[in-house]
Length: 109
Image (tube, rainbow, N blue to C red):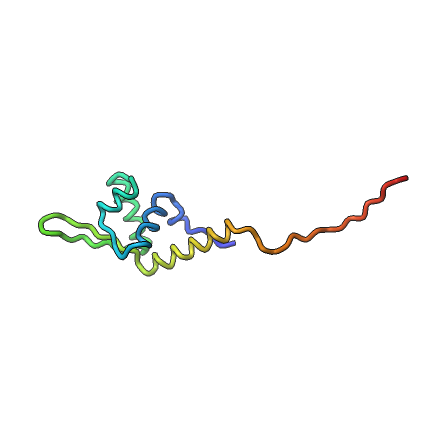
């Protein structure tokens, strides 16, 4: 059985990574709205993912308004694919047939 990536397995970070896996990039406000996290919690989880190399964070401006863009890095994409495979392996029943063991039973008459 494959080992689960504990960094991704945490529910909030799993939500963030899953959202980012379906888009090229997302801004902070989109992630805030979609995850339901507070600004502080989202920031903390993004920092953890960035430290692991799973996301790239770009801070810029749209006009005079600050804009934080987040992308899943190639390492993050690979880690999420590996996580999904591990979960599938855990949740899929083994295809190997169970070996029945024959035991001879003697019943006294």
